[in-house]
Image 1 (cartoon, rainbow, N blue to C red):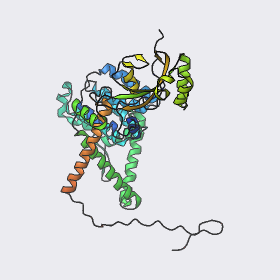
Image 2: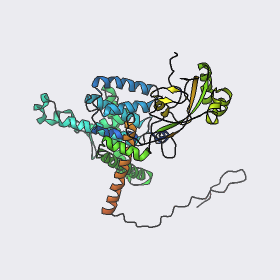
Image 3: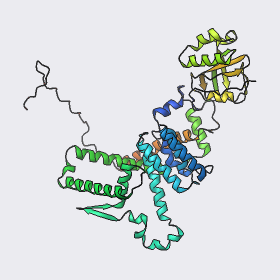
Length: 427
């Protein structure tokens, strides 16, 4: 008997669909990790014992390959798993978080998630500083000799501005990512950084930070940075949900009643090569109904010539396809409108089209934990942020000095001469 081919060349969808029928993947991609990867900060509460340090090293290599292949989202997913695996070597977790910061600040452009990863790095560094190795315990009394204390040591003064090693290292990381500072390159960077401090001090001396666009930029950057700090603080206070909480959340957000079902269309031909050709034509945009009318040997046996009907994802047997345990669940993982590769069926070879989904009661989130946790924590964070705003509004009233704020009118364009050249007029 010919070996049944795998379902291929077709996009796959998550188990859950939204109430309007659109696949949840579309929404996730539209918001691509808006706060999805924010769960990395929350996952620290989850102990993932299935990842060993040896496996984590292999995963780090795999993630690096994903980055090289232009798949930063897949790489971030791997790094997130390592970053939240409590049993993994802390140095590996620290490196995973550093890679996440680089990805979120770079190709994924997710500032909030980058802050969350940076916050984990700082928390781990602070925890390490508070827990010296036994051999170093005696030396802890002279903390100025330790690396953590040295970072706060003042290395230069520019006017009234004190420059610490911590500030320089932070700036290095901002400009150079995870590349470690070394030798002459770092010495040159320190010199450039001190020049920047010198110029900034002169700008303040001249009062340039108090007027014009620079003053507005500084104020806005301050507001944004402080709001990000509040977001990270709230993230660290998010409670870790239990499995039942997540299942209840998934059911409320995406679930329905009864069993999850997938609605299928079917074309059956005699040869596998013909089925492959039909699949290719369907993926190229050919009308599935017309293909069924022209080619399907079961056209007369199905409603509208191709409709196989709804099938439960737990069904072991599908009409006209035969007994194939697990096939229905695999078909349910495809997006609406997708077509499968050739499948061996009772009367030859079949091409299946996914016509729709009906999400039933959700009793498990197996295989979708990351997606559900991400959505759960994102929604919880939004609730906490709003609650914090409401509390602050009650305790610290905003005094509205000017109830109606008129938007300044745009300046009128200067008149043009006969050649179409704008002419300036004296004030």
